[in-house]
Amino acid sequence: MLYFHSFRNNPGLVVDVVQDIRAMNGEAVHADPRKTGMIILGGGLPKHHICNANMMRNGADYGSDSGARPDEAVSWGKIRASAKSVNSAVSEKSRNVLGLEPLK
Image (cartoon, rainbow, N blue to C red):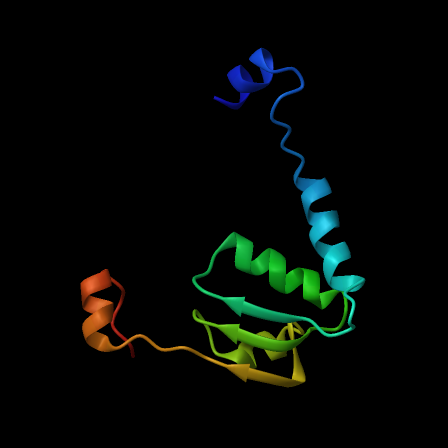
């Protein structure tokens, strides 16, 4: 599909992962004011790219992660140890409705 779109609309859709990562990291590194925060709903690749971008500036100042405990992100340097962080939780009933694994 990407090929056909780029063929018909030259240059059309351009997918440049490196340019996207550079732009995202630049937003975090050159943040003004100098504090950044993350509200992460869900997980996967976008979450990791946002967290990794904040690693370029020694972690985010504020953070929320619905998929893991904030102290895990602190251990990787994605959220600062001094950051104000929260962690959201999904009830066991909601987890069943959503088809999520049960909490341990």
